[in-house]
Structures are given as structure tokens and as C-alpha cells.
Length: 251
Image (tube, rainbow, N blue to C red; front, side):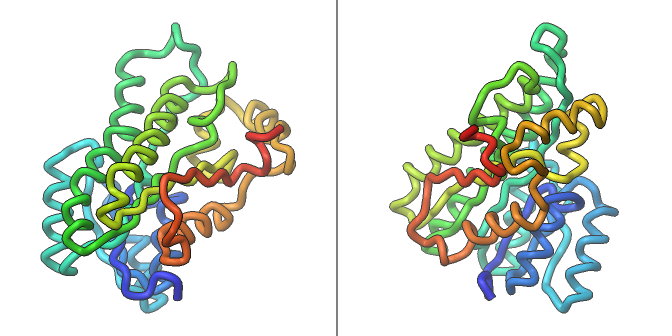
């Protein structure tokens, strides 16, 4: 098992990609904190993990609130005597709205969840990782944060670009503490979040058609990238962004 004995927090883990990551981590031997504001969704993920004899607990966490992070980390350290892995996955997409039509409050909400949340999580876990002698952070970013497009949601793209830079800065500043920080950049993925970013199925289909591979990413393909970067198999990799995009960035 790639993550045997590891203790991991996965945010936005009540559904979609986050749930798939949490379940995969448990399958690979990690103890998993399913962190989300969706208590009912978290319970379903916990049930799935327990059914496969995994070890998991639910943590109600609003990633935008510093006090939520402090309480969650304190509780987990008390129970587990430490944390080894943080996956910053919680995110929202606010739709393909031109800049002049984008409401400031929508912009702020995207930035709060997609960029502030990972910052607060990283900030809360760094002392724990340092005390442990190291740790791994995997930020779930997006190809949207690496390129530019006329049809891209500006709030989502800019928040993911911020997350990409947070990844690099964290890696540079804390490699000496034994902390690795990398990002995964999915292209179009078969998930509710991806589809919600487009006004209709036709718009989503046009986006998929521009991917050289000619299809959306499978959930497991993205999950495997996260597992790899969280595991000791990538022990000499930090500050890297791994695109799982079917060639979208190189076309």
C-alpha cells in the first residue's frame, strides 16, 4: 500500500473528486479525515471507507474560516498524534461570466474557497509537519490556472493561478523542513464541478472537443496523480505541477 500508516486530511471530500481521493487514500492504507461542510455527504464517504475496512473520520470544515482549521488540526493531532498529508481539494466554479458581468461577491467567494482556503490549511499544518519531520501537501489546481482563454471563468482561473503560485512558494520556503508541496492540474474531468462551469451541455461538449485526447479525464486518472504526489514514491518531487489534461496545454 502506497500510503500505509499515513494520516491525511482531504478537503471538499464529501463528494466528487474529493470523495474519490479520500476513498483511494483509505484503500492505500491511510487514515483519512473527510473534511467538508457537507455533513451528510461526508457520512456517506465514511460509510464507504468503513465498508472496505478503512479508517476515517468526518471533520466539519469551512476552509475559509481560520478557526475551523485550528480546531480541526488540533482535534486530529490529539487523536492521531500528527498529520502527514494535506490535500487542498475544496473548490467552486462560478460559471462562464465575462469580467464586466462578474459580481464582486462571486469573485470574492471563488478566491476565498479556492485560494484562501488552501493558504489557511497550509498555514495551519506547517507547524505540525515541522514537528513530524516533514509532510506532503497536494493542491488540486486546474489547467485553468496555467493558461488563458476567452471563455474561461475569470474568478476560477485566477483563483487556481493563485493556488499554483502558493504551491511553488510553499515548496521553496519549506523544503528544508521536509515539507513537499505539489499541485495537480486536471483538464476537463467527468465531475459535477466541471459541468457546472458551463452554461449547457453543448458548451461543455465544445470544451471537450478541444482536448487532443478527445475526451474528459476519468476520475481515477486524476486520483492516481494525487496519490502519487502524496506518497513517498515522489519523495524528491516538490514545487511541481502535474497536468492531467489529455494534452490540452500543449495543443
